[in-house]
Image 1 (cartoon, rainbow, N blue to C red):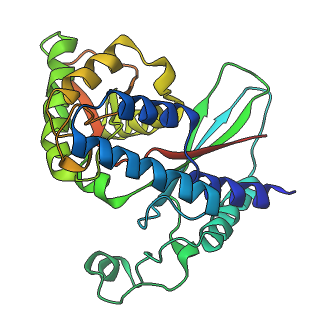
Image 2 (cartoon, helix red, strand yellow):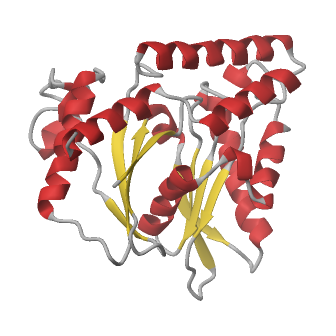
Length: 281
């Protein structure tokens, strides 16, 4: 099997398969949920996951925008041909799913205005620019795929926070943003993702990496703290109330500069996210 086929299979896996840590978190939430409506909603969500995995159908009708992060060690190399193979694999994977046709036709302005309609070809939903991440293991080459849905994008936020030399101030602002957005999201329980960096680009990149590297079975104290605070909001699954507004939280903090502000990026993921798969080469 060549790289193109492996990438195609990874896109399908990301769209149709639930990660083990998320499955475990959802089952635990069902066990611990006291609200009858919330318990019913969580059970239906789990059944949806299981049906998608069994039939290889997408977890959600909004099949998402592909995002790619490449982890590369010092002894490995990547070429322009390799990048083209990834792009072709994504194209084929989106068509095999099939993904929902969402790519907009036209020039730059026409795309913004959506005045020329949509392409029928699902594969033309091209990925965002790739991120390259260094890794300590010199022989490692991993390609991570995320499928990012529109609902969380609408509710996400990347902005400055005056930190006042306090992590509590920074994370408190992130919690406030998430509480406001989760009330409007609809597709809870969420696994919100937070990136804290020096620039808007860096904070957004860290937020994406938190989704890729995060694991609900091994959350940090800070991640548990945010989860506990958000689960006290009584928003609950699908907004039905209860104590399961989030299944967990992912946080990644990057390098910081001497400044009065921190740039914080938060994403209130819907209940099918993070949709991710990793290709190890």
